[in-house]
Image 1 (tube, rainbow, N blue to C red):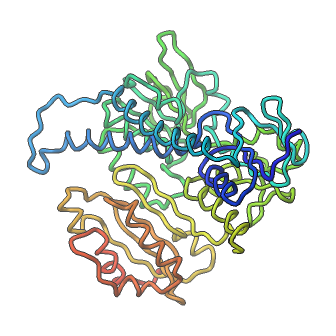
Image 2: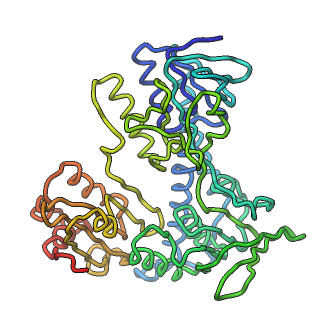
Image 3: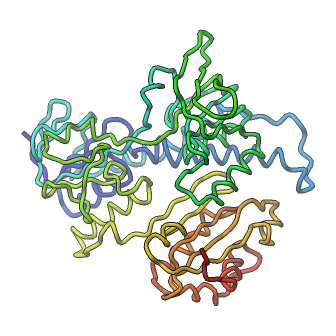
Length: 458
């Protein structure tokens, strides 16, 4: 039995900085990773997919030069092997950097293998039994595969990044973040793309107007959609293609593609660590139950990142680390409920979302005012030739505080931070409205939009 001050399971965006922070405080840390250092973000998520988004954008630019008076010879095409090689180099640089840092840190002992709880505060990895009074679980999540499709030769967000040849026809099951981002990427690369979604709209939790705008510009790029369509069965054909049988009111009951990407959601990797043996409680979906400070029902055992169900993004995982580290070493009392919900959808143009939607604000009893601005009214967007999307902000009519915002359009993934800063500062919307923003920018229309704030009338 080997004893440590702390055991960290998983090298994602919460586990890795926590290992280095604890080591810097003189703690002896056992750091366990079963596959690649850096977790989903570095290996299968943010870094590789945004590299692909950048390549897809270059393809879009090459095909739309004429719109801005730039003549580009016909015949432009994507070399997927080179796109993948560039992505692999970026991933390797990040992962190798983490590995080198770990090798240089004398207070961290790295174990490569799958960890499993064998008793309370006891973990087994590669026949080693480890114990610590503090254990941090950062095992992430993986693609959820429906039973009706699990027998197929399917792709996930992970395996699609290993393709060396473009799919002729990519069928995507699921019309939310992963499905839409990969759909636009591969359509721009040159694949035929069909997205199947069981709900009547894409991104089901989004406001109708936002979903409709995204659907419209993706259709304009040539992506086909089958909404209100449930996958009943998948058939693997002899030629390697896949046929999906649909329960639908409109359209053909079958669709056949050369490849199928399953993007219907994520499931936590907690089933791999045997949490029951450690006395750790999970909910019915497998997420580890934590309190506001990310501690499980077992004192000294914490769950961070995607596996705790309190956020499904890199930025929430990083914030989990900051909460734990701040409370442990800096005397703070930070909580999960302190953070404002925020995320981006990295279609092109992207969506940036902060705080509550209008429906959520009304449900919580807020009396609200709202302001809206279509991107086609934004001069900078017009000058760039990118006018898809819109901006909106909702404000509490009683306090003047910003409750939420959505920016869909060019630069939205960066612009949304300005709204978040005001929300965290807990100051009235007038601070933005009365500010002076550089011209010409997309952001400068936010103060102009807020001058037109109107009370919402149901």
